Image (cartoon, rainbow, N blue to C red; front, side):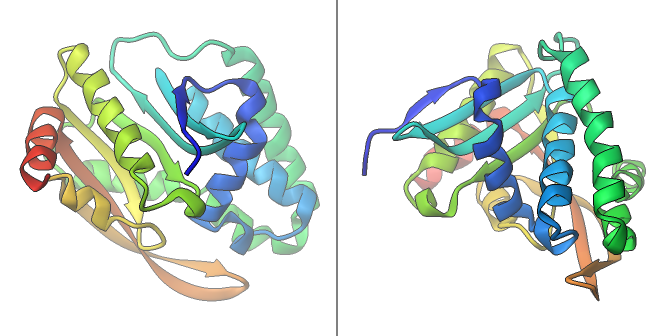
Length: 222
């Protein structure tokens, strides 16, 4: 396996990251018109960038194969907010127009925030520091890339004297990874969405973790 480099996200990584997002979260099952899909993926990416204070990507042979983003309360958000916000709103409009035929399905993709708000109300776990995006290309899964990225974010939290953090995931994702890291499912809610035009029940979860406990859990498992 070619050596993998780790560094902060750069704008040149956008297309690779969008491909990983689509692979991980099946955005093309909400909308499949190519231009509408690209716009929807860009909305997802810009939302994560606007909500984050740190990023890390894994790069192999010049291609991004893993991404993690997070937010630490009180830290400055990532630079480029004006440009990211402009792209966000522009691509929301573009996705709505080009994806009109799948409007109901596309609209549901943007309604996850309502479910997330319900999960925050349902938990007593701290919801201050968040892991905002975490995905790894299927080609490199099982080679430690995801663990390296996750461990890096845990170290980032500890370096800023933080411990408690949380994230959202759902039944489309490999949420078992978080349980192996010592995280606990703090809240959950089912929602009905249309994937490929067919109604489907999706379980949406809020997982809570502790950066110090996670480090101990991984060390013990190792």
